Length: 148
Image (cartoon, rainbow, N blue to C red; front, side, top):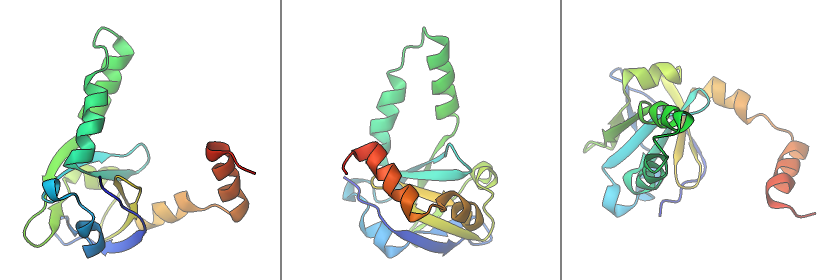
């Protein structure tokens, strides 16, 4: 199982390649160190999965009922936003142009570990999305995990 945390500031090279930080690379499952899957996020970001984690999500979407028009639409929206990527010997992944455009990525990117996947953001968009005061953080924690 993958275990990604923290926030990293990174750069894209002129070809749209991203070097994964050593801490992220070291947390990739051994069976999928070079095989990764990238998809467009629900927000203006990208989601990067190790292959082993993506297969779990792939199974969920694949098992939706094709006789249901809304399920077919969801499958179509999901699978058209997914693309396998390979990490090269320099620990770089080439981000497809359509993905770069979706997340408005140019030179700087912010990577955010989200447990079993990584979010890739334009730093300005991430700063805006991550804005929360301490009270909101506490309220969200209570909403999803209870507690007092």
